[in-house]
Image 1: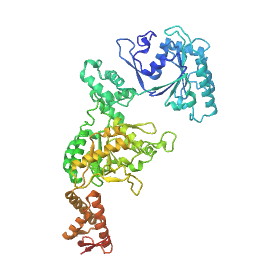
Image 2: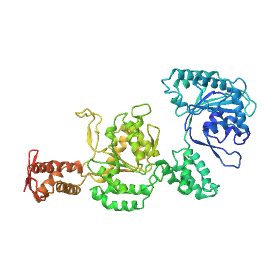
Image 3: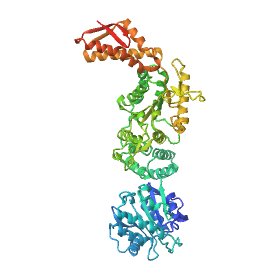
Length: 638
């Protein structure tokens, strides 16, 4: 490869921005700290005008950059492999690099692992060369040099002190060639995070430049997809519209992945005999680590269609909420969630926000959806967000940061999704979560991924997220001038919706209250925008629905008595009607209120009456009457 190659002409036009930044500042900075996406492959221009672009690892990218500036060798050190000269011997360029390194450092033994004291001498020999030799020293895995950057061992402290001083007294070098002006022989630190080095090394030190290497953007992924299409026999993507569309879909689906991961996805696809058009499926397999996709099962559509009859029988009195929920579920099954967005492939499969009065079936509908999709209502994962009201409680979801107790365990949410990405996740009473936790949900809803405390990324692209809330039942008092205060010290609240209101008004008031909470109270309008029109409002249960819920729960009680004690339980019509009236008189408490009333008015006195009797299997027991004496209910049994 010639130094005058058009690839490197015009000072690296078309090369990654971080490389151009390093190259342009060699005359003013003696050391660089590169962090971020270190282990990726990077796009580089072709060796000649007619060839394809190239994908290079970081070391090779750095070498070509430095060589274009006249460097004759690049010395690489890391704590595992020791000292190496790059490029290795074996050709003219490698032999020249070995000779230059020997002139700078003396004889370099293969894989030599110098002590930190010896390493200081070698760094000084490169940064302040005795003769005009342009070179570079790369310290790979520099994050592993110090045990902790803020609590250094004496030898580590001396080493970094020396490096800080060396950054200020390094000597620029002149050589003949493409860049004859003085340039520093740079020392390049490769760290996972900038904080892995002692903070005083770079603070207020203008001779050390910190550069973050980002993950590839969509344009990089698209160009890489076109390069990788050659593995499928497509050499000219521009002339093949179908291949071009497949490459664009591959690039969009690879959002959040590195270019190296795209290479691995291509290998996975070839190994599984997947065509270019089906690469997004290979991306899903690569991200999630599973081959089976429940969303692609042929019977799922049939189950959802059957659910149009079964779900209303289970979630009683909520026809509007059930219909809208099933519409969103159908959209999820067809993979059309977020289809209007430019990039929607990585977002969750479905998002629902259930709002409305308590006890109206929000959790029950979440269980029904889970059973429809996965055949088992227990497959849903529930988080009670009242347990996450503290500022640090988010660590339970994603895991503690490095250095904190429990860091190795990971988070409850991220571990569960990594274990099984095909889930329904229920976040109950979301308004009680701490605002910092809501920021995590914003990332999930927008990008479909979350990084846990251990640095591992989990993907939510195959999950359904359901948020429930009781927002809108009550709103702050309208008379703000009087500042009415409740006995508990908070501003007075007034009831916003009441039983008997038309559903359209209930829906409008609930949605308005939800919007006010996210925009004015939480100052998170962007999170409200992510929910969009997926807010499903539940109505108060009607008198007719209350009758059906009562009958269903009453039948469950009779069945339990039969299953547990082999008794045949019957209730006279007059007693049953009285019980029905007692249990359905407070509709604002919803179906849960009916259940609690049944427990108080029927189960408790029934248990008291049966407890005093000798139970005989297959005996028929009839409740002939029911009466209240104060707060105590009595049953007459026959």
